[in-house]
Length: 38
Length: 117
Image (cartoon, rainbow over all chains, first blue to last red; front, top):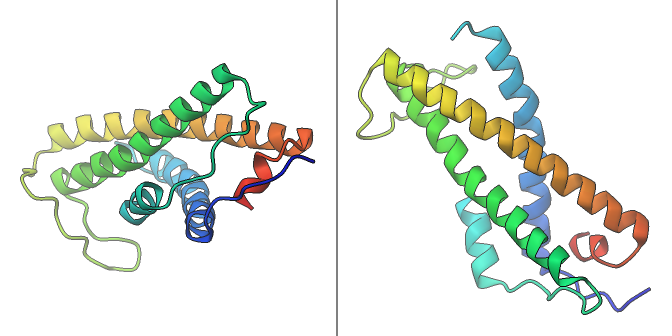
């Protein structure tokens, strides 16, 4: 296993928070697009 | 998202490993830049769309503040939603690519995936 230099903690936390938000928003957006006639 | 960009600029990330091919580094950087651009631009088009429609009341009954300089115009809203939709689709494709690349690094155990966990 190579020597691992990790991202700063703040960066990692925000990355996973953003990931959770975006992955939640994708199905919500698809549902909204399918529910509205626009 | 603003906080995310501030953190990215202020806190420098670790460099890519030396053994990582140059083409792969460039591809990763380009993919990340495209994701960042879409993460900023896509919600702006959505917000402009709901302002123009107008459809500012959310599920919980909260009233979203209207986006300045966007007139109420259903035709304009239609165009903004169309662009928002395509941006969202391309963002989803880019994220799928990002996740696939992350899984590839995780399975190869080259240390790239572990930098973010």
